[in-house]
Amino acid sequence: MSRIYLSAPDVRPAEREMIFAALDSGWVAPVGPDLNAFEAEVAAATGRAHGVGLSSGTAALHLALAELGVGAGDSVLVSSLTFAGSVFPVAYLGATPVFVDSDPADWNISADLLAEELAGRAAAGTLPKAAVIVDLYGQCAAYDRIVPLLEDYGVALVEDAAEGLGATLHGRAAGSFGSVGAVSFNGNKIITSSGGGMLVTDDAELARRARYLATQARQPGAHYEHTEIGFNYRLSNLLAAFGRGQLSTLPDRIARRRQINDRYRAALAGVPGVGFQPVPAGSEPNWWLTCITLDPAVCAVRPEALRLHLEAADIEARPLWKPMHLQPVFAGAPRRVDGTAETLFRTGLCLPSGSAMTDADLDRVLGCLREGLGG
Image (cartoon, rainbow, N blue to C red; front, top):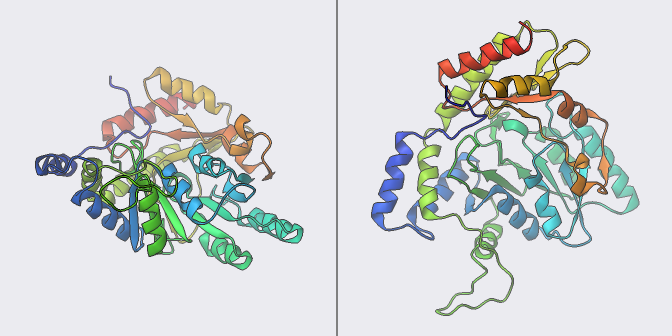
């Protein structure tokens, strides 16, 4: 039997055709018409005016924070329950991440704890320069509360929609909230360009600056002239062509992941102690990953034991993100936590959710899950 991965790339005819067309056109590297088109298409999908194709979602966050003026001595509020790529750009700029815990209602950053942290820092005269808010596992954070809160304190919002492309909140697209957003096309995301990401914004000058800095900050001219430090962050035309093919079938990919999530919920509905990531009213996730929790007060099976049971059957599962405030590299960072993210990490497990999974694959996973859970 072949291995079932957590979220394997789903390659279809459209991207095969587009990448061969890009090869035949001669626009292999570094930039070209497919990159321009991909930027416009992703900007439209996120409800933004501008997109800048980059080498990763992390690069997008780095440039976003830099262009918002984040630097040494500043602090940046960040969701704690996330991947390290959400936080590393803060450190690249010499700033200090301040971690904020999750809300049990959706697992995203807690607006209540965010409000407490902002109030405390305002009183102390230490307001953060920006806040990086993560759309966890393909579900938008509570921006209806977060956006006005940050605006009241004059704190810039950077939306980390790396996992959220195609999700909406009250009909508004992930990536469209705040000053600037970042999306990821890593190989395990809902669409991929084999690697890459994009900065999206309505600010034409910020987009221009990000594109300039991402191209080694080269000044116009026949020779290479540099007046400031730049980065080699641009996405290639060839990868953009692949991404365009993927993006063209985004609704189908979301629908398939929704079907997979529904199957998991139906199959495990009667298993004591099994829970799923809650979906608040008005939120429509892209269902990137289906994640469960196992309540230790009710369920005798622990997440690691279940993961190993699946692994023995060549099925990949993974713990929820280890909170950033528990990571050794950020041991000394300030945080406002209440134990929610730690509990989710201790009790949670991400299940195979890729849109390329067949019904037979899913049946195999469900059978192994039921066996591992004792039923």
